Image (cartoon, rainbow, N blue to C red; front, side, top):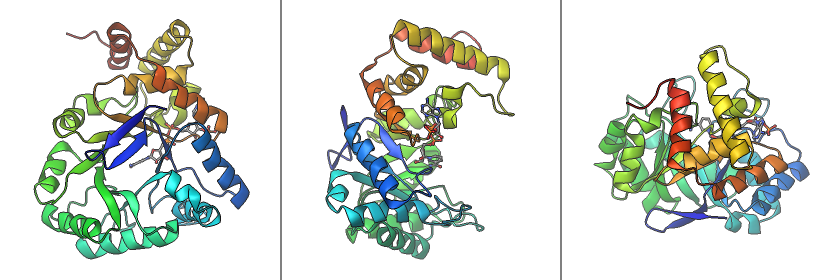
Length: 301
Ligand code: NAP
């Protein structure tokens, strides 16, 4: 599996990450089997968050608790994986990135995950009522106390990233926006340019649009015609590259010339393996632009 370095080589992660938003409600042997399948597919990068599980029977913290139970049962797995988590979504507030909240949230995540540190701690969403200086102080403290090796942000604009970075002692090593062949905003809103400028990785959430690029299912808010055109283009290229539609959709992300790491959400071992194989596909310039143009519904100017 191709590796990508984060934070000047502090972390070496697989080019595809496994997301734990849907890693919930499993009996211990099932949970362990999934993490084993992720490792067998060559993935060493896990992304979770304290809020994953909120609204389900397990509640806030359930996804971290399930992963922590796997680590407790098989401590060697903790060292095998690079573990990223997030804090700062605190419903119903809804966000809190103040010093006390974030430091406490990070400590609570470590307890649930059965670990002394996480490899990457991310602010889940920008809290408009926490100053960049205060959030930075919390992240500086989390790093200095050894609770995280590196830090990053999710759902931040480039300007919010820059404001936070100005108060930090260490670089933000990652942005985490929604990014897929359907949700293409990071290509034009400055996030990916900022990744190129700073060397931060782009951890792409919902890289298959939550599964819709796999199933072809149109959501109520999608432009159905545009969505169908995108699916048709992905299918045509899947034939040409002897690949699946989902592999082409992932290759659209990894062909971009920055460190783009799709965080896949499938809980099915065969699909995780299929996604892992997508890193070997490099789309030609024309094919990449065909996907982008199909999404935009117009030719490049
Ligand atoms: P996704 O990979 O876009 O979608 C995964 C879903 O697609 C699963 O339910 C999967 O079902 C389904 N699927 C159906 N057919 C599939 C196929 N052929 N191949 C692959 N998947 C197929 O990702 P996601 O779950 O929406 O999100 C991934 C991760 O992004 C999360 O776990 C989380 O770590 C992160 N995330 C972050 C934020 C944030 O605000 N930072 C928000 C959302 C998500 P099966 O399980 O049945 O295969």
